[in-house]
Length: 347
Image (cartoon, rainbow, N blue to C red; front, side):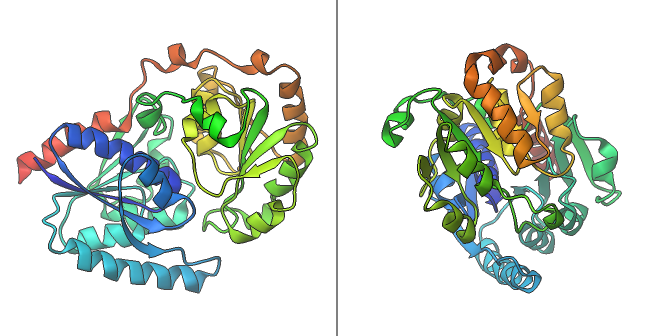
């Protein structure tokens, strides 16, 4: 049995970390879950049954703020972890946690579906003992970041299957929000200040929310304070103050739109139309589409609005039976459990 440290910086990472924690604990391992206080990250962990240790916060949009926040977080992580007798760190590319693990000689299993996240990958993946990622992602896009000693491990599936295969939609989530099935669209706004986000594209999904509110109810999930301000006066729009059970919100929606990637991909893996406006190439999205799942790429607010108007006319036409299409695919934990056994046998 091992003591495993899981660290999460974003809501998606918190969702993956809590899903992995359940698998690991079911095998008798102990878990330390740490999270950064950013966006919905803390609440996502709590919704899924964990009270995480909150370490550090978001550094804002300026480079200096990001650097200082990460340095402070690293110091706090050292104070927390040094006496915890940790056997393994599992985390997405994460400069602070990976550096602490390296300094304390803790093996680091990295997961990633984001080779486009250049800065985090360059600062983290060279320190990883293993990198676990989907077969949809070319090895060369990960190898460029890693040390020759790092072992690359691919699996036939997607991160999101870690929780989608274990959880079921809950209709009561709609009742709590005053929503009706197939009478709303979910919009997750863009990661405007993420280090890897192409600022030059000038994407603002708050404008799409405003347009869509003329046709249907919209559930909006902002990321930053200014996005909250852009949405607060809109009618026919629910701006989520707190996160909810995401699979439920997505499964009963007409469609899900995101400026990132995860929520649209989740929706498609549930058989619900997902529309991604991320201004870049996402290998995992291309893989999802090849399976015949309803994941669409929009290149502008106008493109997304046009597609959504079509979907709203006949929502069932765009939905598919996703369960049959994903039943044979793997989850990250399928490989992680094997790697843990290998690491523990060496110690």
